[in-house]
Length: 146
Image (cartoon, rainbow, N blue to C red; front, side):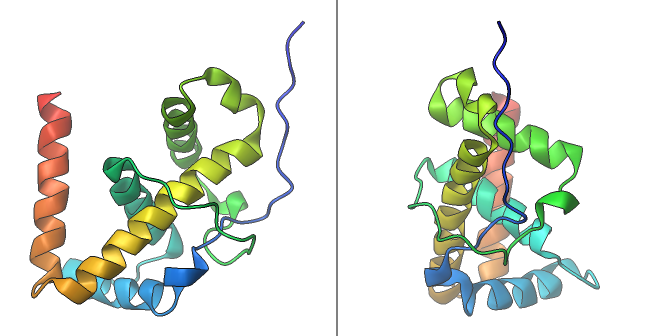
């Protein structure tokens, strides 16, 4: 008998309120400046926070429920797949896939850690752009080297 996946009733993912303001706004402005893009959406910021937090291997507590980060309905299939992979790796058990809330809790915790790290580095680094480029390059190099 197969188990049915418990679907979430959430409409969106949440930012860590401790670092949301002015962290997300400041991060968006810096990313716009660095990238030269005309817009940087919440999903791009959330993905970056998730990547930085996941790489750190540390999770912050689950942020309080809000619908201020990324609307779940706007997630792409690749986002959902990435979230599931991270949740499986974190839980060391595929059963996490049976509960969407657990999957979202895990990614929100890593994204909260990433947001905290990024906020700290924005304040600490003389050139945040150089730090971020170096961080992402080193991370990619480790992934490629395997």
